[in-house]
Image (cartoon, rainbow, N blue to C red; front, side):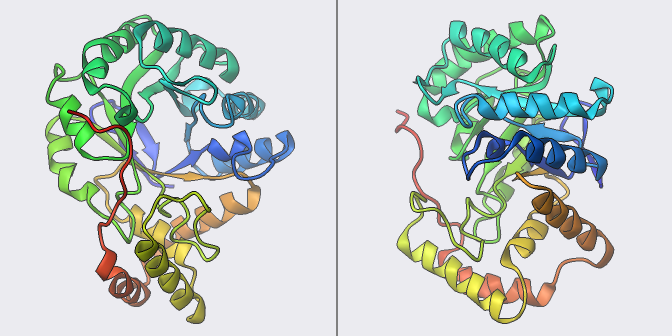
Amino acid sequence: MELRQLGNTGLKLSSVGFGASPLGNVFGTVSDEQAIASVRLAFQSGINFFDTSPYYGGTLSEKVLGKALKALGVPRNEYFVSTKCGRYKEEGFDFSADRVTRSVEESLERLQLDYVDILQCHDIEFGSLDQIVNETLPALQKLKEAGKTRFIGITGLPLGIFTYVLDRVPPGTVDVILSYCHYCINDSTLEDIIPYLKSKGVGIINASPLAMGLLTESGPPEWHPASPELKSACQAAANHCKEKGKNISKLAMQYSLLNKEITTVLVGMKSVEQVEENVAATRELAASGIDEEALSEVEAILKPVKNQSWPSGIQQS
């Protein structure tokens, strides 16, 4: 598994990261045995980055991931863990200094860890960005100084939130951003801000290469916020791949791995089979490259909806 440098952090993360939200039973029930086996196989296959949040499954994802990492029985410096703060299942969004400070203590207890490698403000477009700049990030800075986290990040959907915050904090305040659904076959707008992020020394994590289920044969969940037009174009692309004996999800995953400026692609995994599929797709890409023909056919089908997104968060004044 290829390792890539994360901004100025000095961390070298596997190009595929283990998204642990499914361990919170958000896509169906996962037993502890299943979770432990999945995490173990991922680690043995060279995946060294695990991402979770207290929001996923109402803290369940963190607890299960903590158990699974402990079961590995390997030194703590052999894997990297990222969790989040500010978004909770029961209480919604709270980016106050007090809440995020308590949040990391709670997360560490659930994860059975002394520190996390990255602590991220979760989906900041749902809060006041000025509060993030003036209150939340300074609180996280103190947690960094106290050794509770090694690095600090921000996450969210609209790309403008990243430039808004990074333009208003001292250099080195934010080490990493996590962007989702903006580096997929149907939407590659993350590319537009990569030079800016690099100029700030900020590492890039790309999540949701399958666009939250749009780029799958079974299609997105009912609640998916995409327009009917975008959903039907993605469905047409998935059907086209299937007719050709290809898998759109594998193609989408490989596409998002092609950009070496992006350190790691986070993929939600909950079973040994999913880990095997993702690892195989990554190895195949390294060995023989992407299926250019299938990619150009899919891109042609998605061209009318290319870079179409959906609103997320509260309108920031």
